Amino acid sequence: MQRVSLPFLQAGMMVAKGVYSSDGRLLLSAGTILAEGTIPKMQNLGVGSVYICNPLFTDLEVPELINIDTRVKTIQALQSVVRKFEKTNELNIEPLKGAVRQLVAEIISNREAMIHLIDLRTFDDYLIAHSVNVCILSLLTAVNMDYNEAKLVDLAMGCLLHDLGMTAVPEEIRAKVGSLTPKESSIVQTHAEVGFNYIRKVRDMSVLAAHVAFQHHERFDGKGYPRQMAGNEIHEYARIAAVADIFDALISDRPYRKGMLPHEAYEILMTLGDSLVDREIVNIFLEHVAIYPMGSVVQLGSNEIGIVTTVLPKMQSRPIVKLLTDTNGELLQEPREINLAEHLTLFITRVLKEQEIFELGKSVRDEQES
Image (cartoon, rainbow, N blue to C red; front, side, top):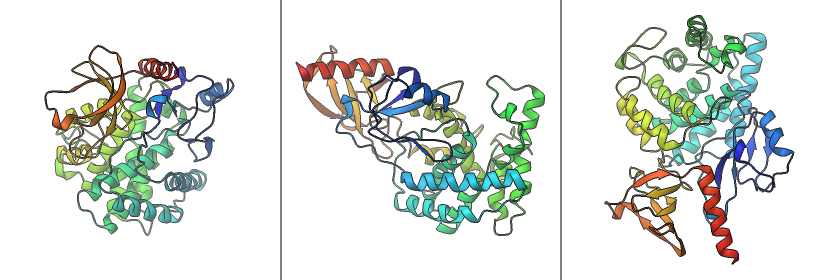
């Protein structure tokens, strides 16, 4: 399947992966054929991109990090907690407990997993789905730091609520497309302490979990907020969440831009270590990010083009690639696989753009039909 942004969607395309609203409702199920009127509706609902079927990827099954039902139930539980909090100023975390236990159980059993798929969501309520993603990404990092189940549950609860204080920020500021004014920035920065002050009062919530909300915008060099803490002064929970927070923000579709590809976000995180975030935590996190996820269409230094079919942990820059063209750009009669870990002089030079992938898919389809 191929991730396709809305401007490139066309009637007749088949949806390869379900599209969900910010509150977990299924908007488009896998197997749906897009009609002319569907695409404008998706735009109105705030959908930024959709996974569609492409003849290049017919035999490719991309693994999920978390079961989709678990993700949806967590989104719905968090939304109910946040909505009630907005109405009553009372924070009841009871609905989250079952979802957190399930998330932790799945991450523990899937600790060697790689992050391949980007969680596509509507951006009409970015806060909820973003918080769930930060939770999942933080758990995957922490389980590989040998956190036990109790600490994972603690961290998960803190991550799900890390942006609770944003509910106190006016919607016109949260949804603003351009740069914030100094006054607006100062208002946004209050969310860390506002959220902390609510979370720390919850009886069965640890103060350490509450510090995820308080400190996730502190920076390793001491230039963050609200207290300008530096290095190990920042609690480890918050240092883990900060890495996940930045990565999810980079790869997520927003109204004003398409999310970055994983290799682009990977490179940015690599440059942030020791200044904004903890280098050791970044390294552990990035060990589980597929720089070129399964299904990426890439060009090698030899000019050959192929599809990434396998990514091994700690070998993300050297995946197995199914070659589709030769060095002259001609389609191969029989695609063949090459393991870049065994061909150390070959490198991936670029990831093909959407339009290029469409054209390549059309060439393959025409070749098959001729």
